[in-house]
Amino acid sequence: MKKNLFIKSLHALIFLIVLAMSGCSMGPAVQPWEKETLARPEMTFGGDKLDTGYTEHIYSSKEAASGGAGVGGGGCGCN
Amino acid sequence: MTSITKTTSNVVSAAIVTAAMALPSLQFACADTAPERGIVSFKYLNYQESQGSLSQYSSSSSSSSSSSTSSSGKVHSENDNDNHAIWIDTISGATAVATSTATTPTVVTPKTLSTTTSSTAHDRISVNAYSVMALVPIAGVWSFGTTYISDSVSGASPTYHTSGLTTMHDARQSVDAQLTRYFSSGNVSAGTSYSKESDYLSRSYSLQGSLSTEDKNTIFTLGGSLTDDTINPSTMPNLNAKKTTHAGLIGITRVLTKNDIVQFNLGYSEGEGYYSDPYKYYDNRPGHRNNTTALARWNHHFEGTDGTVHLSYRYYSDTFGIRAHTLDTEYVQPLQNGWAVTPLLRLYTQNEADFYIATGAAEKADPTVITAPPLSATYYSEDQRLSAMGALTVGLKVSKQLNHDWLVDAKVEFYEQRSQWALSGKADTALAPFSARSIQLGISREF
Image 1 (cartoon, one colour):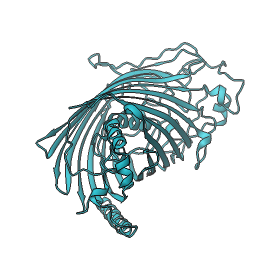
Image 2 (spheres, chains in turn green, blue):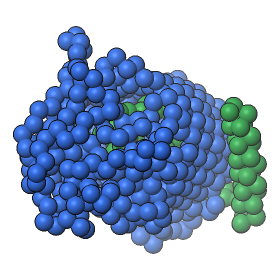
Image 3 (cartoon, rainbow over the protein chains, first blue to last red):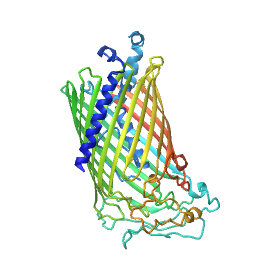
Image 4 (cartoon, each protein chain N blue to C red):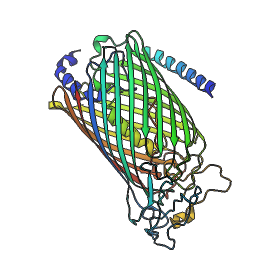
């Protein structure tokens, strides 16, 4: 089981690195002084943590799928 | 650059407006610096779900409002014993008996189940929840974050398909904490969470790290977690069932242009233990569940409107046979005087689990007749959440930055789930449509 997990992680890593490298050829690299917009809160993937917490909890108790964005967090006996 | 100069004031106000959306969590994009300010947030949630009665929506039984013949207690649980019988009443409304209180009087606030007596009950579970979050930067290179959630859940829940309502009450409390250390080219974060209900205890530990390239345009993320759950249903208070889940996540975040950032995450989790729902009839699920998720997210800023669109797609697959697709989109539009509006749309679809038992012909004609699984079936469930279905959410969030420190927000969402909306799998069209409405009110202060 653990070995299986490791191999899957390795494949995923290789896939992502290739993906990142292919991204390099998309255009010139964004320079630090061009990142004012990217620094805006709405351009991050964090979001409003309490909002996300409620929303993900509701969806995971009403649908079969869950997760994807991060690790951790507790389970529940959802109704 | 010129457009940035022109909209500097907009940028500043927008940044302030949406400050509360920037709360660092274990889901970060650019996180090699500690937050400059601390923050405390409070959020209230009111959630109400409802479901049409089977007779109303069933394709084949318009006349049977379950007035019929059958009285309460038609079927009893496989897990019955003398002390812990749950008897099912149907939505027909015969008065019934059914409490399943714990045998041990010392058990504190057990989840109580009883059959509903309402014949036209459309309301299902309702939730009132409060949560508080604090994030504190420490010495420039550390941060500590913690969240506390208290919720109270009550209402009616089906015991098979969308029928056989029982009412329940429970309260859940959960707390989590993360400690993060920031380095020049990444960070490391350790977290723990604890969640308790009368019948369910969950503990989780996680570790996640990120590493960015020299130009900070690419960030690799690697994380892992361990979750340990203990389940003691009020109907079987001494069950002491366990569930252990190991999860791993690997991701990459990449800046594409000065207005575009994308993220890909691959997640894998292996779980072993008790997955059945002890409050449902004919529910016996496999003792392990592994899932794989692939998540792609793209944030794009429009210079013309100063708005930002968030697009995300998630693919989910697990060993129960579930395949699910989730498409999420929202658009953040900053306005004058600190206001911002964010409309959102979410589309979801899944096929049914391999062991899902669809509503049988007899049950379609008379919802009080519970469909029995085939004798040969090892695993079976009549939980609507494991059926093929699709769902739609529309919502709107409004926030206002009151001043440099204070921000308030409100959000409303409407959710509708229908078996007919399944894009793949075999829809069990006898299931009644399910809908929910949630309202969130929040306030936060930076310091």
